[in-house]
Amino acid sequence: MISSKPLQAILIGLVVISASSAADNSYITHCAQCHGTDGAGSDEIGAPNLTLLSEPYIERQLHAFKTGWRSGDNRYTQSMVAAIVTLDAPVLAKATTAVSLLPDKNVAAPAARLGDKARGKTLYTAYCGACHGTTALGNDALGAPNLVGLSGDYLVRQYLNFAEGRRGTHADDRYGQQMARLAKALKDPKLIDDVTAYVVSLAE
Image 1 (cartoon, one colour):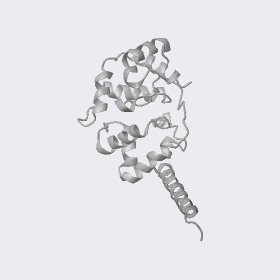
Image 2 (tube, one colour; image 1 turned 90 degrees about the horizontal axis):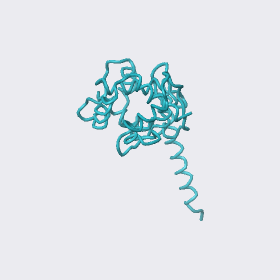
Image 3 (cartoon, rainbow, N blue to C red; image 1 turned 180 degrees about the horizontal axis):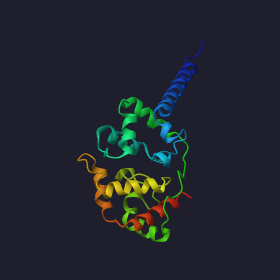
Image 4 (cartoon, rainbow, N blue to C red; image 1 turned 30 degrees about the horizontal axis):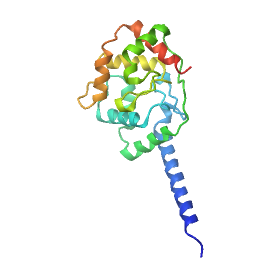
């Protein structure tokens, strides 16, 4: 009598391959046009590198876009909302899974602004390191995303979104609110550029 175990193993393998393919297709269909087939993003259209962001963080941001936590007064948010507004939870989950399987890309784009990296390191340690970690790799327990591999333009834009009240204002967005409060401590554009230059240098 032929054992059923080899057959079960084959069936399990086929299910895993099918699930992986479905995840890949969800990403390619709904995300790759902006974020690229490799997930590294595009500074030209404001799409960040996704490959080093954690699944919990990506899931939370997708929820934020879907439910209106992120301010819709800019073309970046409008574009993202338009891309996912009709997608249901299973499709978004598959796309998120696909992102987690993409090879890491350390540098999405060079720093868009010049800054003093040495001073930026000091400022980063004082204002950012407690949440994002000494090497800027983030801390999911604190809701702080990895910053390494994100472009200078993207980092500055998101920091200003928090500091100027365009992000982190929704009552349910507790991690966003936390960042919005802390961002107000560092407002000088030159100093923000310094921190950005330092963070971008960590991926070099």
